[in-house]
Length: 198
Ligand SMILES: [Fe+2]
Ligand SMILES: [Fe+2]
Image (cartoon, rainbow, N blue to C red):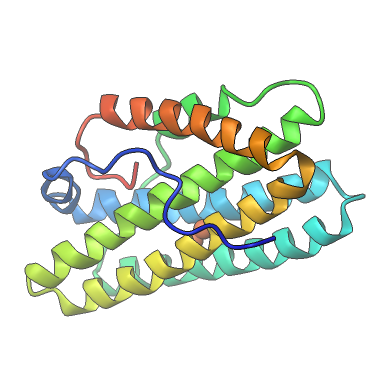
């Protein structure tokens, strides 16, 4: 499978999002901790549901391992800043996107992989905005931290697309990416600007 050039996202985050996100660093980092945890859990839940897909099992397990290392890194950053992580709060963004996953196979697996790709792609965009914003604010540590994680999330989006691509024709893949991309942009546009990743 060839690597797709450019992001699958159909929209850019609001320019004032960084300000809102950085306004409450403890809330932002707590939400980020839970995002990484949920990314690891989601990858392993796909292993639970699709154990017969050996290639996917290997890729998803490695992904879960890497996401878990991100949980460790975010937890370390939270501790260095003297914060205690807060409890997870409902994520409207992910919940609305997951509601678009169709119930019957093989559409269910295709959609689950593509929704995960969009969440990774949006995380990539937003962690990149955090890296740039913190760099402007003179927060070099935070900027470097977020730049490293943003790069990882971009790769993760590609992994999910590569797992999805063999399931359908190239045209069907593009169609579904267009539908989900439009939906994702709509969901993001309706989110409040808040101290969370999405
Ligand atoms: Fe991650
Ligand atoms: Fe990721």
